[in-house]
Image (cartoon, rainbow, N blue to C red; front, side):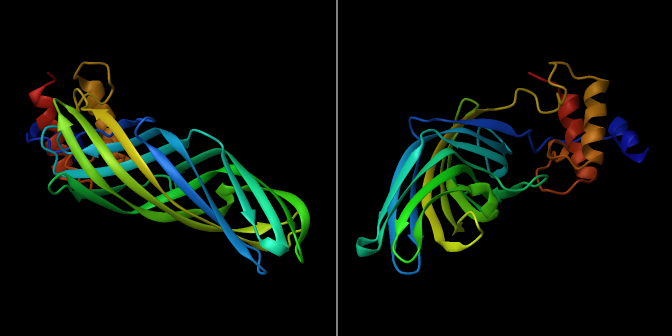
Amino acid sequence: MYLLAALCTTTGTALGSSPVDFIVDPALSSIDLTIEVDVGVASDSDTDSSSLSGILRVELDDYDNPTQISLHDLQIVIDNDLSFNWSFGFFGSADASLTSGAVTWGMTDAFVGPVPIINDFYVLPDVPVAMQGTMAVSYDIFLVGTGSEVINLADQGDFFSTIDGTVTTNNGTATLNSTLPIDSTTPLVDGDGNELGTLHVTGSATIVATGIAPSCPPDLTGDGNLDFFDISAFLGAFSSMDPIADFDNNGVYNFFDVSAFLGAFTSGCP
């Protein structure tokens, strides 16, 4: 009841905006992935690369002169299958192909930020990341054996990485030029559960993505009108601590979000 009353009586200035899907440009985005295989008696590494596509779900506090950024989601697709070959000299060799590869958000109901943007540069720490894809491995290694295994990269679990980069804006359009380091280890196990060695996956993704400023942040229903249904949507989002209700972009849900929403609602849409 208090919240509804506040919505009806309070004014303020909107400081935040809704998260926007920034579209990854495959022509400018790529990943270089190195996999080192260690089978105890020997080790080797190989590298392959691919273009990237997908989205970054980003929230900026302003699309003319942004000073803060939050990351709500990432779904990055490795566009091409990757191939790897490892030679262990006298001990033999192995090869693998990675299909349906992707780098995705590693946790649900979480977002990272806001963090400051200083001179167009930002650093998003502790971003939860998960590798996706199927890796088919064939091997013929002395003292290890001969065989083939299929590895689901999602089974290795989440890891945390730091995304840094720059933000540039032009007439309500923002472009992120970001770097995402990758570093994770997964066991190489045969069909009987015997551990044959380890796969150490490292690399770096360069991600260039563009997003357009939301046309009207308080229009939470997206129908182009500001009415009771937007207030109802805000109340529901506020109660469930949905990021779209964090109108002052500080990760806390309180009276100031109500004030910011009502200020934006009162100002109307362009």
